Length: 113
Image (cartoon, rainbow, N blue to C red; front, side):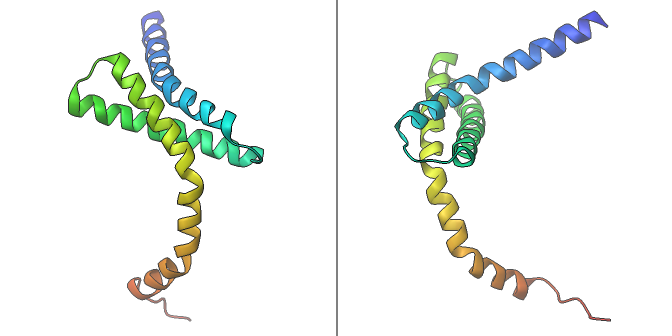
């Protein structure tokens, strides 16, 4: 039982360590943004961390770079994702009516009974 707990702790620590560069990149971006609400800050921070985590893993699987370079990739991607979030949200909201029209046309209609 103790070995299982130790393995779980090691896996959790490794997971958290991979999140640190993206979190640092998003946090650096937070310093330069003025006038954001807390909900927007938290959302942008989570997007930066999530995108950074997956981008780091993709870069690792495709290139095999060392950990230091992967941390740099995670940091930069975290900053970029943080800055891109408002534009992404605005683009989705702007195109939402078009998406709804496409969904109405592609999905079969339910019979009203």
